[in-house]
Image 1: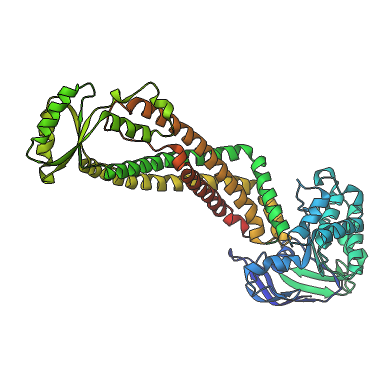
Image 2: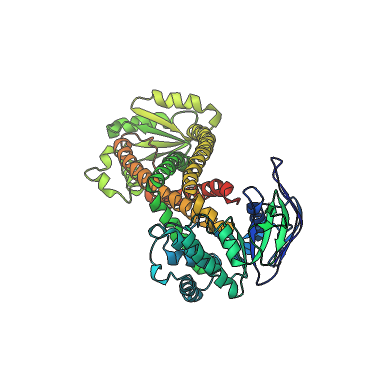
Length: 235
Length: 299
């Protein structure tokens, strides 16, 4: 599904954002990527989306050779996965329905498929009644649910969420997490970058910890912090 | 590209035009101004070409008598011409023939000749010289004859008009090129504002997997429509102004001077001009869009 082999990322200003990253995420997994600000979480996601190119190593996402393929292939890579961002990134002048339908329009999907799949995606995130509302009329949690409906409407095999609850209150955050979990239960691989300790601890999923650009821990059913015998706290 | 995608692109392009109505109007104005200036030169060149063509069809030298000459006086002029050593042969054009020629020229606008008859026309003599190199000598001789009002020597006129035409062509080509670059620059800046206002949207589209062309096309359509509107507007203005000029020109000059220059009627060249305007307008609009969107596509 996602495979990174000896991946390095060095920005032109000399900052090394990622060093020797080896990560393999299999089909159907639910993975948290955590770590303090500047640890390389965002860079990791940018590399997977080919928003940035790795300076070294190999990246394979959904069968796309991300590190070697041409820029012209990028749209097709991105169509094969769904992305959810901290700031929702909805088109403010389009209704909820149109926002979700738009993700299908750009893939030149059949109108009849759009008419069938958009309501299904909206029902899944519980927003069927708000289909004709504009994003500006919705709460933060609802907007993030629209973004999730948009991310899954093309039935991607991988869903990437970059700080999906960063702008939301704890209760709403839980709704989003429950939804991500449900999407995962339906067979979609989910990769979540987050800061939220309570969520990571409660969900008991695979946890990948980044620190200063390196993976310092990769644990099944992990928690946000890792205490050793002496009670010393690590990330 | 699928038809539904094309529909989306056209709808989106038209929508953008409404969304930025003031910038759209500004861009249309700029394209219109450019095309009007281009149109002025185009009309100038077309008219020069047309007049050169007419002149080339005409006999080499034509001597015009004053219109008010009596038959007796005309006979004297005729005698002086036929007796001149440089004249190889000559042909007298009567008032009736001259008027008939005028009627033919104004076949579409007979109303302009209403109330006139052949008495307004001068009698003229079409002359072939024995030795064209001595044309200057001949012209001054004909001009010295009592009752001769003017002499037209076509070769001189053709040479002169050709020289003028060439200069006009060169100057207009340079000027039009400069204007095109300027309007391209202004259009691309206008669309850049649209693109800038929508950069978040473009960014989102990139993230959900839109291809560059899918994002680009609506802007190109927007630019092309702006160009098209500009060319139609320019044609209306140029065409109207030209018609007024043609009317005025033909009313004031035709019939007074027998050496008249003819302005080409708009209905004969209108199609060529509107095609040229549309082509240039649409191309400038579309290329301007392409240029302005380029750097926002790298995400």
